[in-house]
Length: 150
Image 1 (cartoon, helix red, strand yellow):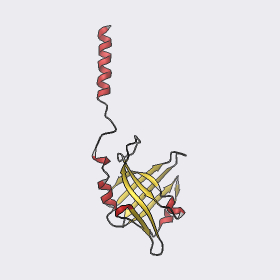
Image 2 (cartoon, rainbow, N blue to C red):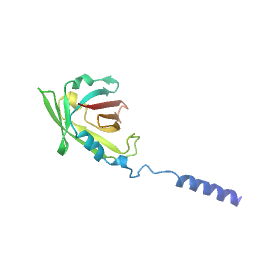
Image 3 (cartoon, helix red, strand yellow):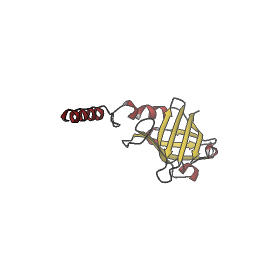
Image 4 (cartoon, rainbow, N blue to C red):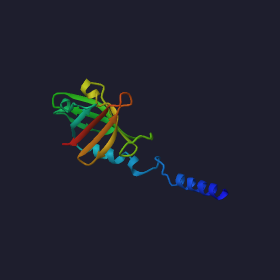
């Protein structure tokens, strides 16, 4: 009986010891590569889906510039809106597919641009496409946002 207990306890200990922690310091939590990618050139919104509603057309003709000092501008040649942006490490244990990074966007106006104000999770990014997702904590709606480099 004593051997059964010790064997069971040892198996439990080994199982727990082999689990990995989600708080590792992997390179996916380093915001620098994403910041460098976004800061290169201008971008356009090629998809914005707000809780199932395609609202991409609200951003047609706008070029987005992710500049230094966290300044974000959107301009269509007639109108220019200024906001903020950053990429930050997020230690929360969500199911962020790109690790623990948030792509933060903030606009105070106009209303269509305020819709982009979120702490987006990065789905993927390349030198030409940045794909983001946000799952609302309130209503559970899912928003997706895709920037494509000009």
